Amino acid sequence: MSSSSVSNGILKFATQYSLYTGYAMLSFGVIGNVLNLLVFTQLKLFRTNRCAFYITMESIFNVIFQFLSITLTILTSIYGDDRTGRSLIWCKLRYILGQTCGLATFCMICITAVDQFFSTNHRLNLRQMCTLRLGRYFAFIFICFAIIHSIALGSSYGIQPTLGCTISNYVAIQYSTFFFYPVLIGFLPIVIASSFSILAYHNVRRIVRRQLPIIRRKLDKQITAMVLMRVTIFVCSVSPFDAYRIYTINFPISQSMPMTYAIGRLVQAIVASINSLNSVISFYVFIIFSSRFRRQVKFVLVKICWHRWKYWCCSINNRVEPDNNIELRNSQMESEENV
Image 1 (spheres, rainbow, N blue to C red):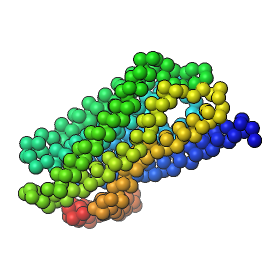
Image 2: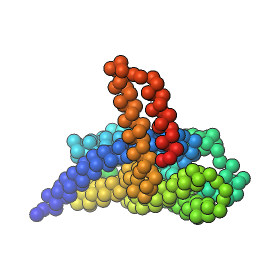
Image 3: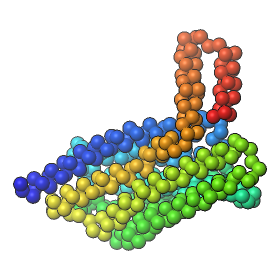
Image 4: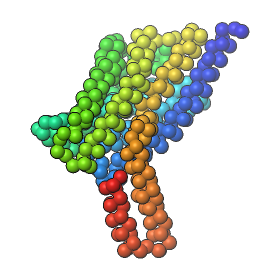
């Protein structure tokens, strides 16, 4: 068997792998993130909780990232590549959108861990330091930073004849190699999120000694456990991709070497699928490791969404009974407090 046929076979397998994993990630990612949005926005318990707000923002960027990923997957399945090496605008836009979603997600994960540490701290002044209004300001600032940074770095991408869409500016290469991938979206968020989530978990273990309402204690324990597991998955899914990007930026693979290029495409597909787990898996981690979250999801789907759907159907059929609707809302509020 010739090397060209082997390389073509590897490229075909990499394309099929990207296609099927892309569709699977899109399905599970959209469903999971939409359910996250429903639970954290519909339950009154979470509406004033800062960590729930950060998780909601993270889920929004995850949905955007999922649609970007599936766009690249569809292009690859049709043309054999993602077309970034053929259109300069798409080359820059792809990395600007991807880096914006990635940076914003990383910032939300770090803020969630830091905020939960302050929320569970035994010192009253530290607990009172963080408010929902302040959290929204920080979220807005970090999102603006992610957008501006991504536009600046994405503008340095260009199309080279044998290498395709890659960073063409020497300063940007050095910045990406020594700061962006290893520090800004590598070591720094991993250390911040890991350290503060562990510290928050340590605070929660002593929460029984504090005079707090039972509902607040249960919520703090639930959110802290969810954040800790979320950070664990974040570290495991992001680290391989950062290492891969540092390597490919410094040692880009030319298409003139078919076998090496095919192997590189396969490694890229595998690493990208692992990295995509970070934007897919949060809901499933929450529902696996938190029995209370499972009850909350069931409550939102059955008691809120299902009843609203029935109410809308009754409205269309002119069979609305206002008194019954008020009683239904009251019963939902009472049930929510017990979830």
